[in-house]
Length: 138
Length: 138
Length: 138
Image (tube, rainbow over all chains, first blue to last red; front, side):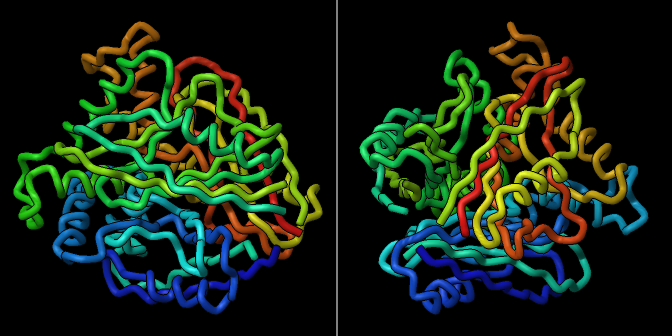
């Protein structure tokens, strides 16, 4: 049983879903592990992880709009000194995922045909985000 | 350290929660692994995984109704050419789980007394769903 | 490859977020595993797990208020004989996490600077909650 661990850095520009499937797939391919378990851990409380359709990009726009409505910025949050988008960012993180574990088989993640992995940036301004990738198997 | 991997296929008929605990428990029992980590990965973006009470079935009805209200079908989504239930299905998937990892001890998942595992179908029409089960341990 | 498994018991008093990072970190330190994967499994359907900011406690208050509004108690749920806070507790569990897997590196969880782990109690009255901690690595 072997392990590989590496940090993926993503520079974001604004709120929205950023595709990371290719970077993660490259890490899995480089590890030379045939069967195992891959875990992604987003090291933030105002950005998160999401699995979604990788085909029609309007799905992503609808997801972004839905979360803007579900967790509005114009609300009297107590925690407001980091800007109106900060507390909503924390709530959107709680409602989505900070972590994701994907089985690996035949040297590849077992993603379905339409599944893509995304970092969901919840802040308005650019941020440097890191996602730890850990793979265990043989 | 050994690994076992298998795909569970579930034929759905309509929106709703479908119990999968028994099928998953059978896979764990067959693997002959005493202590380890089981991971379930749902290979879709319009069906998801949920842990919920396995006793009173009205809990499931309330969950289904709640999600119908939280993510309404009659909303002007941009992505609408796959039917009015498609975009809500993506959003309901994002709000629940695509993956679940459960420790195994004494040859069994460490589920609480009232916990059951469910596939949450979010589309109106029948679908053939697959959930990858991966177990690692000894 | 070694494994460690232990149950963390948390006595709750009321609805809200209870910090568990220190207890989990102690389990990781005691295990003497340098690199691996830690999994937390909450054995309940009316309490859940959340990763959130560990700095300003008002973030936690805002999270609690948000969930009180998102899943109201004064709603005609079918499943109501366990009290008005029971069905909302199930729904809040579905919307957050029952499980969390965190890579371990250098003998420590790879948490970001501002990340804390919390048990989210969703019932009004005191409960004895258990979270299984499983660590696999070397």
